Length: 628
View: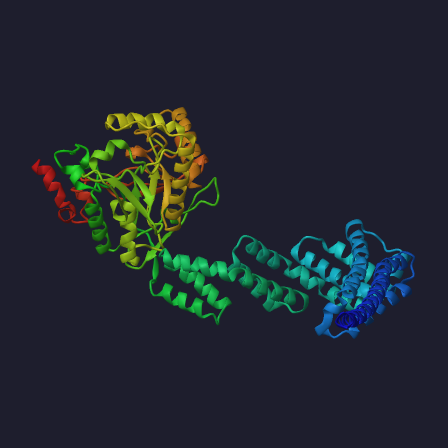
């Protein structure tokens, strides 16, 4: 019995499992049927979609425009029935509408292009297409009518072409609704074209303020098409200009160009009257500006060489050099700046004395300085860092610190490498301006003249410098060097980085010839030409456009001399000679200025009495030199 009972229960379970199989089979059948129906529907839908757009295009090709419009409207009705919130459900239909509209657009554009480019006269077939399909062609034709008026306004198409284009399209269907008002404005468009093109030129050159000002003036004169175009361009320019001009103005504030910043933010305040950032920056700029007057007196130009950064190296018995009299110490340069500041001198850019936009003729420009101030130009002589000056305690090169500030690097008496902003005249002047922003007029700093003899800023930037550098190292009893091309490339990159920082902070650059030719006045032209080619190629290529030349030792060449003409033809327009008293003159396509050399040997000159008190300048550290 037990066995039979056991077999009975097993059979019952089997019957239960059989029911499950039946249910699963039914569900699978239903799923297969549903899947088949889905594929059937999708298949029919895809076939419908595949056939619809080609059918629309074929109807147009065969001139069956009513049928083509019917196809288009049918799809359009399907799209309009769907709620805008559920557009994804009929994205395919939307794409079909776009495809059909694009087919029409391409054909309309082709007809319009032929009219404009080839003086094409519309055929009956063209007119029939444009008129019959105007539900789709009207918007495209309107765009083209407005477009050709815009081209006319911008000067890229002539008026006869515009007139012909309108003559062809105006009579068709309801195109006249767009064409007639524009036709009535063509004379206004023609009148405004010159100013609009001027505004666009300013915009293209990045002079956004001038562009907006011009467009605003035009906008005040015209309504309609011209007025609407001006509104649109003003909005575009304002959007384009805001961030870069705000950044430019804030950089001006950071680099003490307060007068330029005041002008820029004043212009921006007119264009963006509600902007609080612009208002705040304008207030900052005006707090450092004052009345500016035209200046007609003498222009003081002082010149310094590398500074003595370590007086122990310069003046102690162990390192003492007989050449220390050629240099100022950092202490002496700082004292000179303090004296000049107390006497109301202000740093100016000599390039503000000229208009050099014409390469063949230099225009004199009247210098303007803050009321009560006297102009000052500072020249740093031949900043290449010769090994011969190491025993004078000077820097060995320029470097950038972690804050991207230009510093001098030198080796002190203990043999340690020291990096300091105030180890060189560049950093000292920068720091002084930071403390006394009114010591610079609109961010002007000084002029750094560079040669290529041995190095540039202490870096070997050309293979031609290696021999001269090694000769100088040998004379200084220092190890020889053998830099690779990679080393030279690296050095050029470092100099380029330093030049960029200096330029952004108001410093300008000048040549003092590649080999620092000591007497240019008595040097043959070919020698000067060969030297200049080397300077432009190896040094000038690191500095960009350079328009100033500082004659070594002040031995200048007269401006009418053929050698000076050679320099002028290469773009050098401002020349510095030498002289203890201030002097400048305009010549044939050039400006010449004398520079007064500042060194320990020259500090006691009577000519400098108006600049500083000699007794306050001398560094006490020089006493140890006298004692030894």
